Length: 279
View 1 (cartoon, one colour):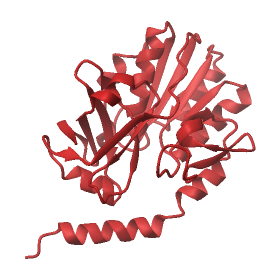
View 2: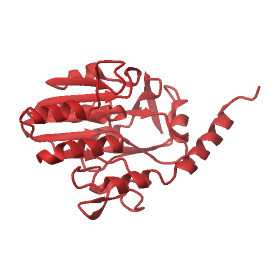
View 3: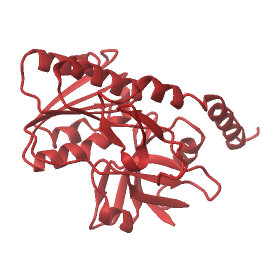
View 4: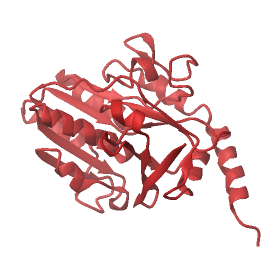
């Protein structure tokens, strides 16, 4: 069993968990993910690793409560245990000295961007971070991101905090101003990553994205996470999750992400009925 050693509310819909998982922590690297189950009968949820502590034997994950399983996870407290916690899975981020790099984190994507920023900076890169959310109350880890970047730009869609802009706007401005940018990472909702890739593509700037396709086993056996990259079928769990953003078939990915919306809604409604006390 995998014990929750820390639980923290980051935003009204986002929680941080530190999980006791020494075998996972020992091998975890930036860009990789885990698959957890809240209960033995629960579904397998893939979540990108937000941080790890090899000495303490813990993994940090950040979870947005959207569906039945994440809502179920949200009612657990410190000291409770998860049924399973498998990882690290996927290929880690390729960390090297590229030069000047820009890392764009949108919404929940801020969490997995954090360890990548830290490792790229340790490798000698000049690290520029861009983080954003729909509104200020949904933004988190600003100070943590400042600690692992050389420059940090903060935006919100509605202008309720910091600059009013989409995360692609300052990225485009930097490129158009002629700043030397050697590589870009974009992590967040699929639609955000699509537009990060579309922003950099005309300039030929290398752009890496982390695909959050539907996933079941996390080992490449089920095929649920298949994506089209460069005209080839790839599996996000074993070939990724990071891919060249300019080669991803974004329309297909977005279509596949929507295919179980009705079932997800029904599962959430059933869970909420059971979780609500009868008066």
